[in-house]
Image 1: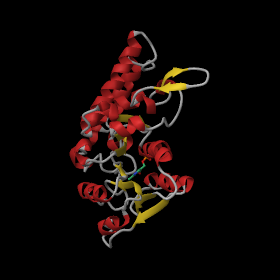
Image 2: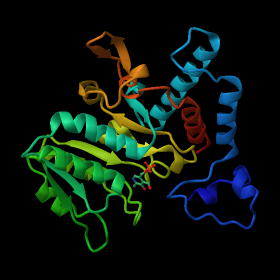
Image 3: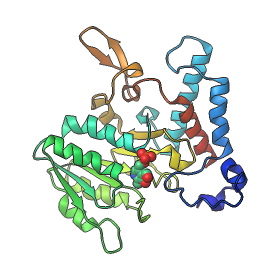
Length: 290
Ligand SMILES: Cc1ncc(COP(=O)(O)O)c(C=O)c1O
């Protein structure tokens, strides 16, 4: 789809290799000059540690990082940009939810529902959470057309279901999950948290997060013309606020004493260490380009 919309000359790697036909955008997309230039510009004009320095350059880096978050929020239909947590990508976003929300909320006797269509990034964190907590992992099978069997999903989701993890678009067969139907079905049967893997959806479909009525949505920048190493977890405010931190150190701390700490507000509570501000700026440039 991108190839038919975007001129080849916008992509330095493709422009430099006229005979090359790149067919692996679902694995990772090529990057347009607009994105490469935005990253270069960040390092050439604004490089400083965001949030860490009381001087103009650090303030500029902080502003650009903040603006990138606001751009992502608009792109995925989130009114409250604090609900956008920058991660390394979809995989880290899923691990964040599994480690933080999962360890705090899932216990023996609970059930976690996934589907047979999931990428390992949206399967193994839940499998491991089930093993660690004694919960049961239920796997919804596929129809002969290789789509998620919604009738089976309907049968599998019960009041025991704590979490449903489901892909928005399949990386294997391209099937689009009817999320509105899934949300309706899950909400009618359980109080389960709904986690959606948007890695293959975000480059191609509008994602109205607030309107979808889901709890978490994850995606990777590098499939969206943005750099590798940047992605997002979108979560509902109340859930993110209730969750313990995922990693410790740096910006996620409010106060440190010898024997205890308090945590920063969201989204910073989940962004330990120096943020990947340059690639967040690159992600925002990719979104503007798209
Ligand atoms: C559907 C889906 N989910 C998750 C991932 C993992 O993404 P990442 O490796 O960027 O974390 C991919 C990557 O191929 C994917 O296609």
